Length: 228
Image (cartoon, rainbow, N blue to C red):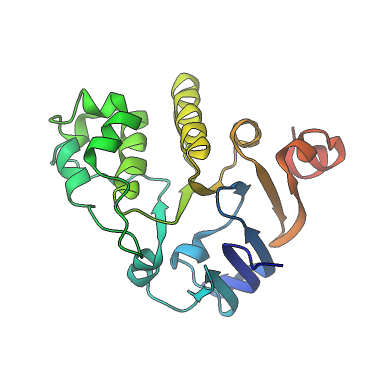
């Protein structure tokens, strides 16, 4: 059996002296949209003290975050972090990078096709965008680096319901285009509507993993861990 595209094995992660993940195993196949909680370790922001993280067979654990990005991991932070005094177009230009195999499928022309709302405001300062528009820009900027895997950290956080719906539509579009997505999200209703697979973490350990359809019909898991 072929190894999964993104593979985490026996990962222990700490914030300071507090251990937050215990022996986590995770497998994401190419093209999947996996919903879970707690993945900053994969981006290198909270690296594991023990365990393995592999992308396409390449070991990532212990590497600095910029080398992990070069290897094909694109991280979209929960607080968006746009360059506020630069235009939408400038925010995209600054992120231009070929993928780990020299591919450049994502460029400004394609971004503006997939994100038409950004095309209408490409000369606007990013700091003047709404929260939802900034979230879209941050996702678009990350795609400009042509990553193999897109990590989305709380993409619906602090957004109005109508904007959350728009972000969900965008993620579904990317999913249908074959983008591999790892999604950390507290809003499980949001996850149920866009993910293909789910992994539930409780008290730092994985307690359930299945397709999103299985999770939708598993009332015991939803009531015990997800409060839905």
